[in-house]
Length: 252
Image (cartoon, rainbow, N blue to C red; front, side, top):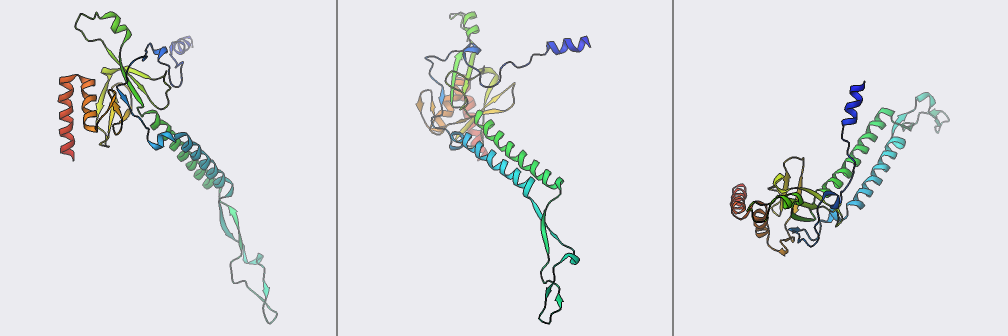
């Protein structure tokens, strides 16, 4: 028992939930020009919260209707049917089936309600998760510890940090990671690029159409080339850019 308690105490639980401030991560982007600025976000990213609220309202309504008002037709036995007199005074059987609507079995209503709930919550999670993976602005700054330990005259490049601000971040917040732990990836959309994370799941999306790269608006081709050279250096970046362009031409 004591060993179990010791292990529980040794566990490091997350102390912060949600976007983190750059100051708490030891990073400052004051007077730093963004490497990338998407400009205008996609329409669904601008209206995400409205879409999520609408989705949850529709989901709640669908769950309530399904659970409390989903019925089926149940015919009444003929003995309980109401007979109407015919022209000769004799009772005649009704020509239409007599019955009423009753609620479906609870297991049917419960399963369909659960499916509606899971679908609605899943769609809201996809919208919020997708919005958090859109790059709104991006900075590349030297790491403070690396900058202090490596003299400027040593010729050794200081470690660089990538600062990503999604639509969920304010100007003083962001996701910070070493640039060497990321890589540029192809996107199914020819107007986009992706940033892959070597030690994390998922990726970030960069829209190049109408975005500013290195402080200037440029074509998608030039924006992609500029990002490769910024990421991997002039020589290696150009080689990787040309290689990626050749792969895209072969794929098309």
